[in-house]
Image (cartoon, rainbow, N blue to C red):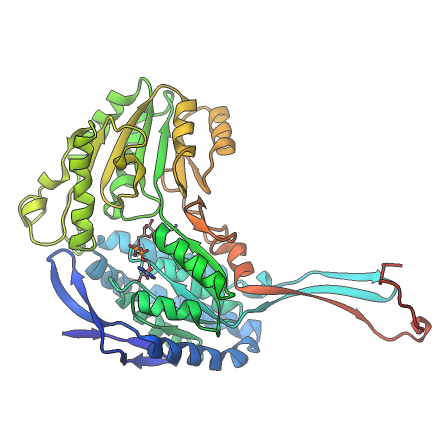
Length: 502
Ligand code: NAD
C-alpha cells in the first residue's frame, strides 16, 4: 500500500505519530493509499524547519525570489498533467476539471512572479524640513495554510506562492482526503531552487490543525474549508495572537430575470451546478427563477442534464465524476428525501443516473450520485438553507427581483452569486444591493482572477482580508513607516514639542 508522508526541510518525512488515514479512489470505493496523520511533534518539526529557513529567505533578494517563482511556474506547467491525474485519482473530478484548477492555481504563481513590483513602498520627500518618510512591507515569518479537499492544488496555490514571494516560509496542511498533490508541489519547489525548509507539508487532521493554531512560531494562518471549522480556526488562531483569514462555506444563488436569454441561463446553471459534482465553493446550488420563466427554464435544464456523461475522472468522455467519500455522498443523497418531505418536486433523481461502465448511481461501487434537480423548493427549507456541496440544483420560483434579492440577502452565506439579465440597469442595481463578496453578471462562477482577491462575506469569510491579489500580499506582510533625517547642523537644539511638519 502506497504511503503518503509529510515533507519537512526539503525532503519526504515519514510521520512519527503512528496514526494514518485512508485515501480512496472515489470512482471504485477502494483504498488507494494511506496518509500519515501528524501529531504535535510532526507539526513542531515542520514549523522548526520553516522558522530556521526564514532569516536567510527573508534576506534573499526580490529578484532572486522572483526567479525561483518563475522556475516553479515553468515546472508546475510542465507537470500539469501529472498533477491533474493525482487530483482526479483522489478527489474524483474529471481530468479536464483538474487541469482547470491547476491552471487557475498557476495564475496565482504568475501574479506572484511580479513580487518586486508588488512590494514597492511609498516615499515622501520633505515631510518636514529635510525629513523624508517611506513605507515598506516586511514578511511575517512562518505562515500556515490549511486547505479543503475540493481544490487540492488551486487553493494551496492561492496561498503559498504569495506567502513565499513576500519572504515568508510556509507550512501547508492539505486535506487528508486528497493529499498527494501537495507532495508534488513540494518536490517542484525544490527542483525550482527553493531553499529547504521554506515550503513544508504536514499531512493530518484536527490534531495537526490544533497544533498549528497554538504554535508560537506560526504568525499567520490562511484557512479554506467549511464554515464551522473556519469559525473555529479564526477564533482559536486569533486567540493565540495570529493573523487569520478563514474562508468558509457557501450557498450560491443565480437570479434569473425574465428578460434573460434562457438558453444561456440553462447552460450556465448546468455547468455551475454540476461541474466537479457540485463540490465547488462557487458552485451554483439555487436558481431563483423570476416569474414567468420557471417552467421553460426547468425544461431547458432537464434537457441539458440528459446529455451529461457521468463516469470515472480518468474517462475522457466523462463530464462529471463521483463524490469524494461515501459519507459525503450519503449526506448529499439524504437531501433528496428531505426535499420530498419538505414538499419540493424531485425532477431528476441522481440516484437513478446511469454511470458509465456501471449500473445506476445507487447500484455502482464507488461514491456516485448523478446530477439532481429539485423544483419548487421553499425558501428557508433545509435543502435551500444548508450547504449541500454536491450535484444538487434547487429551483425556487420568485415573483419579483425584490423577492429574489431578499432571499439571497437572507441567507447565512455570502460567497458568490450571479444575475442573468439583458438589462444593464437591473444588473447594476443587483451588484450594488446584494450582500455577497463575488458577483457574476451573466457569469455563473465569478471566481476573481489572481490579480484581484477572492473572498466572500458573512459566514463565508472570517477575518477582513481576502486571498491572493494585493490583499494576499497585504496579508502576508506587515507595514513599517520610516521617518528619516540626515543630519543637518542647522536643525540641532532641544525641543520637547510634538513633532509637526514645519
Ligand atoms: P473541512 O472544513 O471539513 O476541512 C477543511 C480543512 O480543515 C481540512 O484541512 C481538514 O483537515 C481540516 N479540519 C476538518 N475538521 C477539522 C476540525 N474539527 N478541526 C480542525 N481542522 C479540521 O472542509 P472540506 O470538506 O475539506 O471542504 C469543503 C468545504 O470547504 C465546503 O464547505 C466549501 O464551501 C468550503 N470551501 C470554501 C472555499 C472558499 O473560498 N470560501 C473554497 C473551497 C472550499
